[in-house]
Image 1 (cartoon, rainbow, N blue to C red):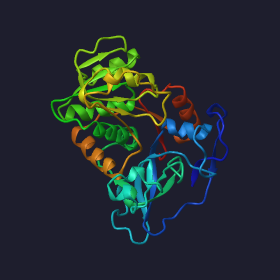
Image 2: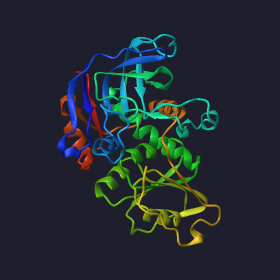
Image 3: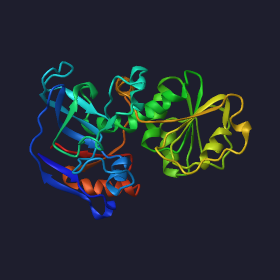
Length: 333
């Protein structure tokens, strides 16, 4: 099979990925092989390629927003049949036995492994995954639209779930990229008002087009108190700012993997049972629930498609914020 591999980390402009020919993989017990149709490009791929995250294996095939067709089934697999659609997310494996797995929090499993980091991902013609960690995908939707569901879609859904909000409440979104766009649509489908704060005029227009109740900048006066909020930019200074706009008992979810230093110098910002929680990965249950909901509500996806031969260009574009919506690699013709 053809695959883009990373052996040595380097700035993405130096094009550290190489296109090579590898032996076709075949599934072992409990695994399926997916003929990859498309794979979304995430900033985490760039972080791994450039060395912001350590390299867990070399060579490595990046990519964790994988969608395709099951074309080979290993011994003992009953969840999938040949020809079915399947998707793969960031979570590639969990032990199933630790206290977190038993509590339904497998995203916190100390033995968790991740697609495109600990296990080879989707910048290749085929990928292997444990059948229990693959998602069933709806028929009738283009693979190019389904690929971003596997990361910004599912991660946004989990961040939304962590707010604990329900019908008739108010949600604030700080920053408005692809993940926030999914959250807005999910919240609206569940009867929740959405208020968006972002600097970008382009992103303000995008939020308005999706029906946000209010859109403004960081200097604008929020018209209401919020019941929950999600911060997407990795900017620690936003934490106090977002807390100041929460109502009593509100919860603030921090979406980034890392953030600049956070300072809360006024106890009143967290008094009245306001709380802060961070987002850490996703679970299979998040993926299954989001796929069902996204299909039911006809979630809108904005993609920029790159051919398989242009994976390096796609990574560079993502690195410099030059993609309109979600970058997706079309792997299969």
